[in-house]
Length: 331
Image 1 (cartoon, rainbow, N blue to C red):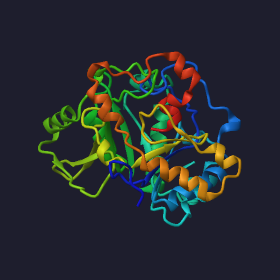
Image 2: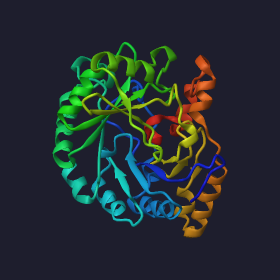
Image 3: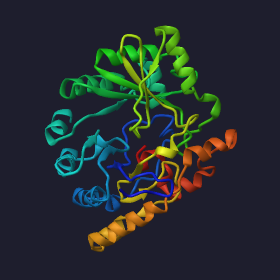
């Protein structure tokens, strides 16, 4: 097992397949224009598959496909087919029928509100019905699914119980996510955070006593809870209660930059050695030596800054390096 300086194993790889998205959610992509990754830099599926082989050999056993919006990547089922059949991979997460047939095991869908006007204000597109149709299709094909909801004060914090009920209706576990200060253009502010404690208090007033589900061996970002009737949901509280000390995930962008932390401002270029024909041993050494020196605790460090935290204070930096945006590195 490959360990970093805080004894965290390399086990979980977030694999971004595109930086493009067909929505413009205010907490991720609020601007009108973005600097996109040059198409010639984006990894071919064969290149992505080759890098996944190296990561699997070093101990990674869970891979999640992210974006942008991963379904915008042309022929995505072909990549799923390449990766899903690899020995040692226990979990490959995020079309529906084609992805399932290609070997995709589960799927997570983002849904922040059930109100059409709020959805349009948040995402700047009137696509609520389309998202719900996609969730219905995912339920049909995969059975159990996950729904991720970013909770923002005075935006959708009055919908927690409604989203839990909607999750019940489509056999989905809803995961409520604290509003994170990630993405240089997101205009994040601490007064818009709804903490885990507040979410649990709100749901307790509606449903009664809520029990935490113990899972001591898990490194998943969400803490899971159960309502009195057994309905489960999760809360990802990386803003107020960071889980840096157990974080085993890293991120590979669509153009082959490897980031050891969601908050990292610098990554490791894996595309360059791959395209010049570096042997597997060289890539293995590069990844393993980098991980062994990992000491990142981005969310904890952000929390220590209090109200002074701001991910990227100068917009010009974003245009010079689009990797600093959330939609590029694949949250």
